Length: 242
Image 1 (tube, rainbow, N blue to C red):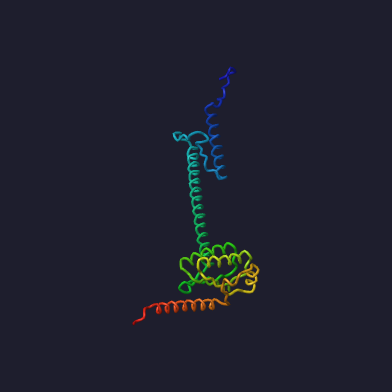
Image 2: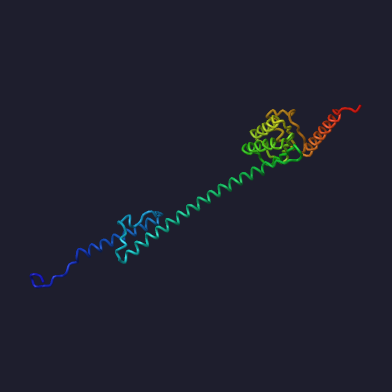
């Protein structure tokens, strides 16, 4: 009772007010961290903000704090797995791209062995600078590997030749001659002929025929004649019986 004889109203204790304040701060902390998680930040944990979560304190809010941290752990793990899967997909995509490019190069340079020592390369479509470069590398490698004596370049299916591409074609024939291989050109269209003439193409160094079949017949006839001459020389070289 107070001095006037009335009962005094019990004021809230400081401990109760402190508990309410702490719980309010804990609620705000959980809400803030969940808001950050909604923005994609899964790295913050409740214990890192409010101090270590006291698992010895058994109150109704502890389970929410622990569950929130577990949720963040799961979200972070899921994102790490997703990023790893995306990285693997990128690697697989790159491998497929390289395989496709290799396949395209192989299909765009269909080098055919038509006879022993005779190669044929049908050139189809537009030949840009990059394709011309890879075509030259592949063809020269096959010339060496097959020990080719003749190479037939068939331009029947080729499109328009830009000046740079025409120069690449001429360099290809020059490189073949340096390797001891005889180049033959077939199927030259009027537009390709004009492109080659504009570059002062020396036709005397290269056999030009209308069709692939003509070049093949010529090469086979030359080879047959060479074998016949070789056989005749071998017979003449034998010593005659007395």
